[in-house]
Image (cartoon, rainbow, N blue to C red; front, side, top):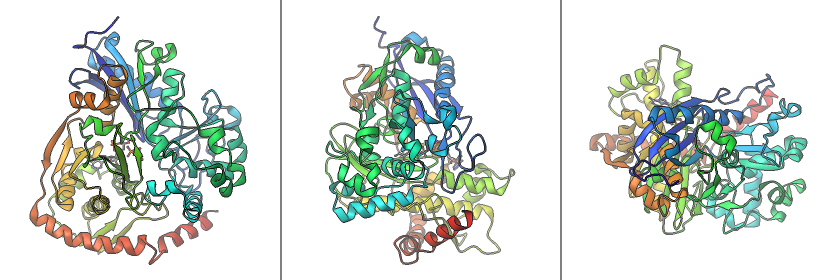
Length: 543
Ligand SMILES: Nc1ncnc2c1ncn2[C@@H]1O[C@H](COP(=O)(O)OP(=O)(O)O)[C@@H](O)[C@H]1O
Ligand SMILES: O=C(CO)[C@@H](O)[C@@H](O)COP(=O)(O)O
């Protein structure tokens, strides 16, 4: 029975680092009728497994049953909050952090859910911020450069330790039994769709940006064998799967998933997507030159272009990676909100983001005498090196907590400026900067970004951008619109010029950015490898 288009709704579910957020959205105009959040009960496993098995440095794991709990809790709660008849919901779409990898049996059962594997770290989900595969990434990059692999240029010259191949090679080399037991190496973005439909389809976005699928091919068997002879069949045996186009239906909701969610069995389920890339649709910002920055735990910068260029240190460029018909570019900062949260957490309970922001807002740029490097979680773009670490210069006995908090915000803004300038210099100009994500709520942070970039900031209309983007893809998958671009025009929203640069502040930030750039190149491009040496000493001391 077709649903009346004026009441038809879709559900978008955004899987972030610490929680899943469900939104019920009206198809006709993108109105968000109700939402709910569910925090993952295991959060991020960075110190130990649930049974206490210790984890080494730079590990970040998750428990996949937490993801299914979101379907069972946040989706019904969002429906209740919206007061919508579930029979009016015609589709569901999801987005996920990436590259978050699930080792599974052939039927999609996660390895960690088998009793015999529950105490093995490599049986668990490797979260996007799992950086312990940097040695494998270094070998992949060295070999790819030596062999002149054509696909390396599509990733700015460097493959990240966060992605599918480095993490897969680490699995093989550190736990060969777990590698052998892994029948499918699955992006969480696709695993959750598998749970909703019973069908495993690899989405074109993560396959391209995180799985090195370029021009229809993965890295060759020869390349894999040269990395490690036992890795030769990694693609054929554990990775390859039919590719689903963004905005198409991956399948329909199973009876079991209908019971979990309270939705109707058989409704359309959109091909999986990534929390960053799906947000461009929510901001109705799919045209070339519109850079959408999804600012949360990390920041992802996504932008379309009608031209293919190599941008040094970008995360990747994929044909149709954001929307069909255009080259989708991605860059990123692997630590942003995480850096602020880590600082706040270490200060003590009486300190909060809000208190520090209020105190910091009273300062003029440069007043605190500090400058920081925003590499507390490594550097994703433009250096692609997760052995790098944070730095603070200028601290004195007069330095106050709010001074450092402001310097950390400014450092992430300088990191974003480095990315914007690199794109523009490479022939992919940034014509509009649109902010999205959880950090939008910090107006001081937004103003600092406008001043540092010295350009107006547009702001996405929704404070649940990724979830709205997933809902838009669900509407296209359900056939309510002919394609994602048409659905985005009807359902997405943005406020242009939400923050305008202050010329005086911008001038001071130009001086501070010059100092940031000097530190960036000195510590990040090999002049002084102290950060890597400290990591090596740390690993030896922790062994
Ligand atoms: N007022 C604030 N100002 C700056 N950062 C904040 C503020 N509140 C929370 N954060 C940071 O934002 C991050 C969460 O961002 P959010 O977009 O909600 O989640 P996710 O990145 O998982 O999608 C956390 O790292 C947290 O430390
Ligand atoms: O890397 C990507 C996208 O490519 C993100 O999913 C990852 O940085 C996690 O983002 P969040 O900050 O947790 O939303």
